[in-house]
Length: 250
Image 1 (spheres, rainbow, N blue to C red):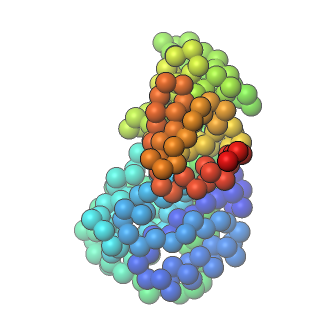
Image 2 (cartoon, helix red, strand yellow):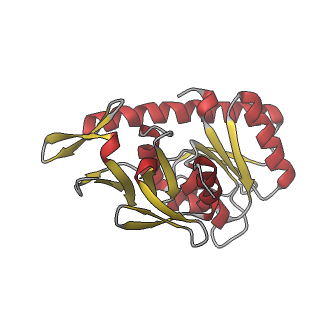
């Protein structure tokens, strides 16, 4: 994973500071997902965009604070660099229960901030590489046109062209095929998304990935689509992106 491929989400209630973070990230060479200051928006983007790293404030708008979001998404294994004004031991210990890779207390100098972000990016890349190695050891191998799923100590080859959709189920993914077989793998859907070619698969919702050539119809008004006999939801954030991918005759 190179720095240029990293997507970074900024969750920050101070707009000017969020813009400063965005400028620093772009200078480093990473892409920035638009900043958000509300817990619901943050979760929507986390599930729809699958960021590689999150710069997280703690005191944000919404029902959840930054630490609670971090704990809620721990199973997604996304590293989090907290940048906050909370200099509190209890909050720090709670943050450690998430996928925390750093904790900065404001105010922080530009140079310290740049150094911390660079370090967080390096750690994120190392964690990703380690997870890929662990995945290869514990269950599923990925080839250019196939996946290998483990069932009762036997690896079953599945062509990518046979995959209809992938469904998130807590810490697992359920892969549904054209032959109505279902393969279970202990992997977050965000990691599964990275294993699949973007020109063939699209994340329509935080819980679903679909094969683009398996879509039989789309109802953008209701926010649903059909793959085979299954009707799946499309998140608001991804409706426009899906429309842009489709060639439509109107």
